[in-house]
Length: 280
Image 1: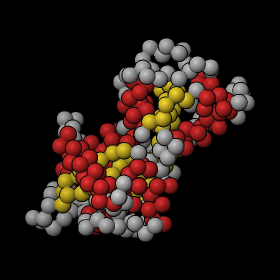
Image 2: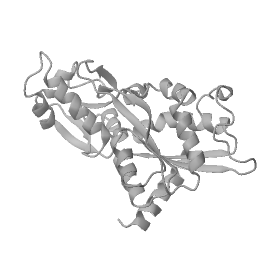
Image 3: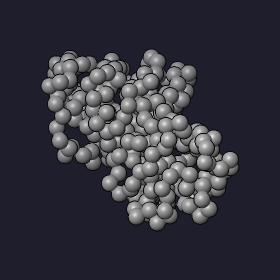
Image 4: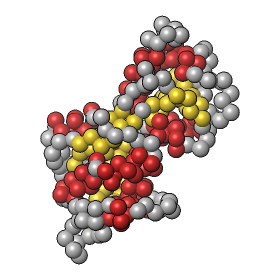
């Protein structure tokens, strides 16, 4: 896909996201937020486009409401997908002001390519959990069961950050007492599909189109249709979320202000409500 077609496609996604954004959640205490954080000049409304990891989708609905109340005149438009997909779209010239990734690798790739305004900023972290489909027909009760023959595991594509985190957790599990030495190989043999992003992985399990998946703890917490199984601390993995201001943005000062706010106490207070942890 050439640069013009990629940009046009992303603009359509963003327009749909802006029109369908859910504003029905309970209002957050905007009074606790800095009223002038990154505020534009009076009478000059600012619209910021944020490309964000799929696992941030629900949290960013609350962030949007809080930030727009705290900084009058600012409007946030959020588009979510796999971090790798969004990074590629930025490389191809898609319009954006801020990129929020579920890892550090994708933002740093943009930094190294000279496509950002300033360095990457870590703003949150996450851990992993196993989710199982409704009624758990495969009888999965511990992560060790993921290696049983016949278990249908749903995973994400190779470039999606959750895939690297899950692979590390699986390798760690294979070294724990009680797990077979071939646990990583048996787990891999049970993967029946690979989805575009972590939200699509969760949806497959919710619909019963797979038995289990390894996702972020925040995804497990958000879903009402799945049960979660903890991964032992000795094997779990900390996922670090990092953001960058896009070099082509015409509102870089305001984008930096939003990123700094998100990485600060006020922004983290909202992310914590959704299960996110402090950046390491």
